[in-house]
Length: 148
Image (cartoon, rainbow, N blue to C red):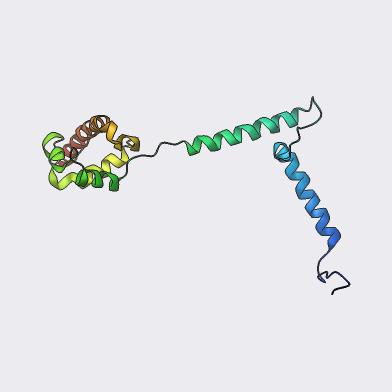
């Protein structure tokens, strides 16, 4: 049984306690609501500004998380290989994309930031509408660059 507590030779208990207390106080000032206290001093405008900035900072994080995911090349490739409606024949015959340019068209569509929610089975016609629009612009760019 130990009669004394062990203290490391290079450990300064007072310095550690003071440093920890400073860190806690700084954090309490920056994030008062995490500690369940409201800023004091009713007319203190600095606390009010800090509070508003803290609230807005959290809203900005939520906006970043709500960004729309877009369709990527692999998803288009998978769709046109496995779907009964979206086929290579649709690309060539209806969208007028040359067979040797299909992969380039998929890359072009990825760059156009098509909402990935359109890949759902209940939104096929909305996706088709986007593909029609983008195939037209793709073909005009392709034909325009081949003339140079």
